[in-house]
Amino acid sequence: MWYPKLALLMAIAAAGLAQTSTPRKLIASLDGKDLFVAYCASCHGMDAMGKGPVAPALKVEVPNLRWIEKRRGGKFPVPELEKLILGEGDLRAAHGSREMPVWGPVFMRVEKDQDMGLVRVRRLVDYLKTLQAR
Image (cartoon, rainbow, N blue to C red; front, top):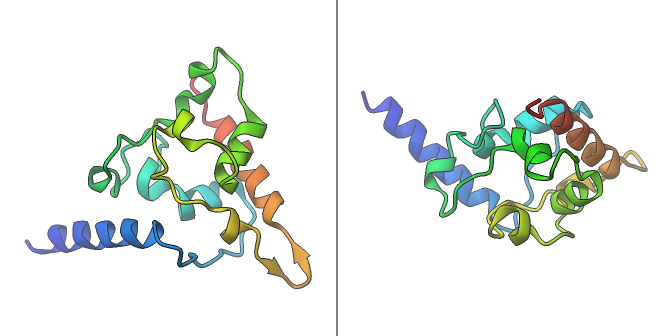
């Protein structure tokens, strides 16, 4: 019965590592869902409702990403979300704190002489748009 406790401890440790300046490994996929699973689901949950396995270990409530459009009066703020993911926006206004890791440095790594960082960000935001509650 110590397996659930070990899993929780590992999730908490992963959350702590995500907050450091040590960059996470870049996944090869450019698919928005794959990017979400790799970089967002640990906190936001696979369903994007803010109940991921790491969420209880954080100091602030993790936002439900399915309600972005609803919270914005029916508008999906693509440029604002891209800036937040890249670490360029004011996360406190949308997130309540700077708890969310900045993925810009990870996404912007140059691979094979081609920078696909902005493609990753756009595809992640496009995927989030498909999850919006109607």
